[in-house]
Length: 65
Image 1 (cartoon, rainbow, N blue to C red):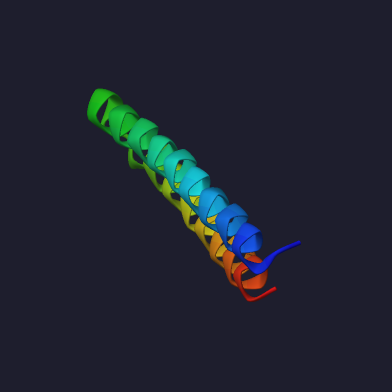
Image 2: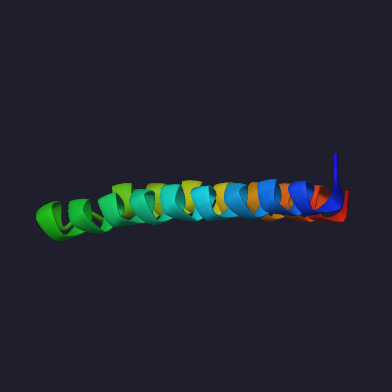
């Protein structure tokens, strides 16, 4: 696989994960505003942070390949 194609896949994967994480945190914010309960917001925020860590790890691995 050419070097540019690997970087393109890594970049698209990072952008897609950013969209998913933004959607997840947005849903958590909407739940917080609607119910006032911090539990679901912190759960969504925690899941988003875990996904961010995995995404950054995969990006570094694929970008350096």
